Length: 168
Image 1 (cartoon, rainbow, N blue to C red):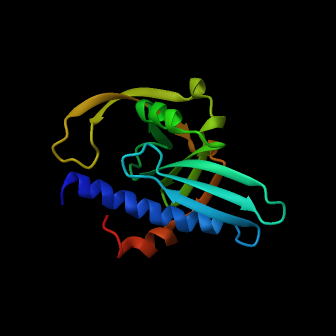
Image 2: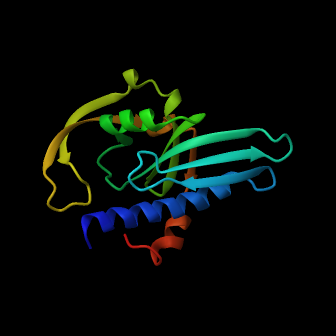
């Protein structure tokens, strides 16, 4: 499998899992949900609109999705350059960073986080995560404490559902 095929497979997996998660979070008796998957090369993974059924109020969100399996850190990580790119691509009401970590989905509203008060470190890591031949570069990373999440939801069942359908 090529690097791009691995990236595409992971993106498809996360989008499928996130679609199910969002449908469970937004009760269909209270909200009408429209989810739009962006192209793989886009800096935002998906956009969705939740419209209240009773009052017809509409809320639109941009979502960036990430999974962390590294138990080394007790926080979620976002690259400084990634943060700049998704903020530049963001034009809806809220920018959500959805992170799958340790069996939970953490939803962070990036518009509410003051990154001047978030721990950051310069770290050497692969430039392209799924490329075995990727060169290593230094990147500034932010370590967002999990307690800043606006929602924490168990998510193991979503990954179990898609384990056999999509590759890891």
